Length: 137
Image 1 (cartoon, helix red, strand yellow):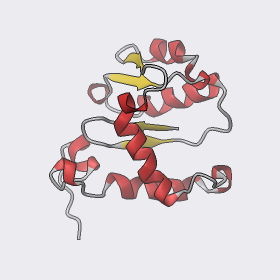
Image 2: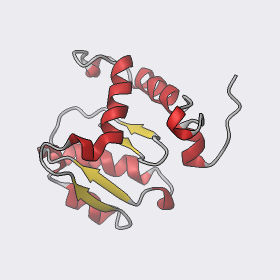
Image 3: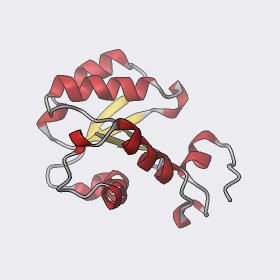
Image 4: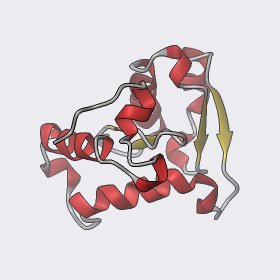
């Protein structure tokens, strides 16, 4: 599961054992709870069955509003789709993610969050999200 901040491109990920709505939304609650309250305002989901329990997340995190993209409209979640493509450079689509240790996936995520991007004025998503300059060499 991936959650991407639209403004900063900051990425949060978690492995889920299956696409059951309760499992996915439980993990989403865990990820969003780890953020400062002011950093998470809205979430735009696709219309997959795995998000059927989004009401539970809404109850747990009352400060976050949920929206749904129109069916067959991936461009409405373009930042997340693009970030998933970047993540697929490290983990190809046919790869069994369950066989990859969490620490390895987190290294990929950390490298993406610390990678300067042209669309961010050559700052990294981490720098934009946390308003803190990194000294990368």
